Image (cartoon, rainbow, N blue to C red; front, side, top):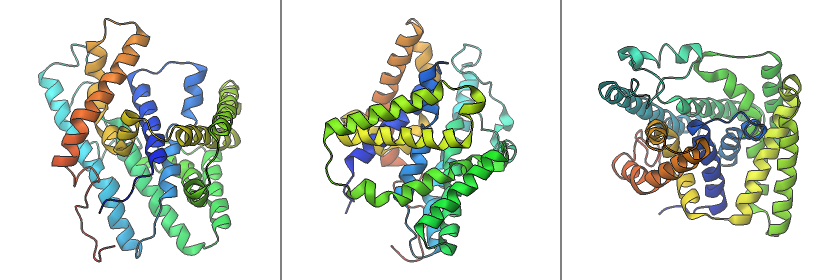
Length: 331
């Protein structure tokens, strides 16, 4: 029996993956774009923290996360390599449709580039799946030793703050990103009951709170770069952005297309980069803003009516819909 969906959470994920897709279509160097960077990915860590479960032990937990994160990562990695071959023979790079030339040795990126902390070619956004796996495992281990939620939250922030102060960068397999994002996951876990069981709040109050959050992160985005990059601003602005998206999602509850792609945001994350180049090429007749909007609409529609339905029907074990590796004991 399928679990009942929490609609505003699907909408929050849909809004977030929409921002990711829009960023990859075109990044405008504006204050608004800077503001969006504060919370675009942290929201995913936060939402994952909300739904953290220990299962029956570290083994079952690890297997579950391998099914949900590592197997999809390997699947999207191989699909990216095959897409690269197709683009190579269709001369997409020479035609300006894609931005990176194909190399046959890209198949080894998982051992070479990732070990240097670099993204893989053709499908860089899937780095997040590895990072989220690391965050889950680290949180589980920390949870074993720390039973008090407040101390656990404090420890998570200590890890994140020290990682920023240490200037961690380009660690193998995105460990630096995982450590810095760790507090967002912990806050999601700490606030899970508040987020999921809170009483109804008037839409006016939710929109007002969202507007205040946006005003704050917009102000943070206007700060000079050294000030903006401090751990205080990083976490406070990130959490404000998360609060903004959750408030808007709670007020709206559901937007059919956005909520749908939010429900299957992992599929969108893994496949959208294959469409970005072709869509920009197709809509190259439009202005930059028109190209931006038309490309997003086309990608969202293709995801809703073609790519997601095909993925969940024919590749459920590789898109986190079903478990490829069975748990020793069924949960």
